[in-house]
Amino acid sequence: MSAATALEPYQPNHGARDFHVEHYGLDLTYRVASHRLDGTATLSVVTLEPVDAIALDLHGLAVRKVAVSGASLARYSHRSGRLVLRLRETASAGARLTVTVTYAGAPVLVPSPWGPVGWEELTDGALCANQPTGAPSWFPCNDRPDDKATYRTSITVEKPYRAVAHGTLVSSRARAGATTWVYEQRAPTSTYLATVQVGQYDEVVLAEEPVRQVAVVPPTLAAAARTAFSSQGRMVTHFESLFGPYPFGEYTVVVTADELEIPLEAQGMAIFGANHLLPGSDDERLVPHELAHQWFGNAVSVASWQHIWLNEGPACYAEWLWSEESGGPTADELARLWHARLRRRPQDLVLADPGYERIFDDRIYKRGALTLHAVRGALGDAGFFDLLRSWTARHAGGVVTTEDFRAHTVDAAGGVGGDVLVVKVTSQLRAWLDMPRLPALLA
Ligand SMILES: [Zn+2]
Image (cartoon, rainbow, N blue to C red; front, side, top):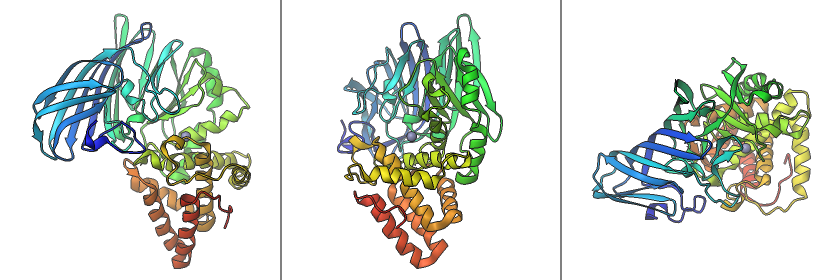
């Protein structure tokens, strides 16, 4: 481990701070039956300070070849999930290097406090569930949520499998026995939101407006998917009115033939299990939740997992907003319900700094949503939704911290209600974000 990666409490043993990856070119071949991945990754790297080595994250797979242009490679080592490229001479800050890594093997999931994550075999295919540290199970990367890059992903699979990656499909070329699918992702993307999905899938168009929406599903689930996602087009329109323009060129929902514990978001995409399509279940709320992540988490990303409430609070609040819009309980009714529930649970969690082990604690989701509801109460609807839209407009493609949100909100409060409202919102945010005790809902 280099000094640059040490002692990052929310990113243990992943990522480096001394370089940035601008672009990943991934050329992958995956064999479903043998679960074998062959890859060549070409990384466009910019150094941020003088460096003697480039330390990438790559878990489990065997490195066959490494090449560097723009600097001279002395040697490399690959141990404990770190692929370290030692340079013959120090590269100065701002140096541009191209790093090419050829690798192969059966992807192995990366252990995490929440169970193993990454490239996972399905009964008949594969999925990527990277969050938070699984991306190195399938490509060498600077595995930090704030090191956002563009991607070109080429993925070859045998017929009759379809491969889907994040971004826009730019070509699919069929040869004897196999098809190569190429996707371009021009929006800056965190490594955990990069994805490949492989299965015997059909593509079903769900809506063309306001953005093209498709479902990628096993043929036997096509009808169920049409039903389960029937309101998604209206949902995108509604969220655009509240959050600002949909941030990407497309929205794809993948439904696996297997059951999945939870759905998950990727860039311009969400992945659901067959079990999430069942009508009348509580799972219907997950459709707006995953969609909302495209604005909150994917376009506007966290600078560190410490700030995950900025992803999950708005995504949870979007569930409540859609409930209200679609004739269910209102956001205010749901806020009161969850406030009452949280009051009965331990109040020992600080939203602004929950600790790495608790970044997926459900209280972060609910308290994050309640924080937004409290801000809405203070600013009024017009001021609050202006705040959300100016937040996404300002930070789309970038990364944010809780302090950024605080500053943005206090600024908005000044515009709506002058110094009096600034004082009120400042103290309100302190109570919601910095103290473990649950504040009253509309103090
Ligand atoms: Zn979420």
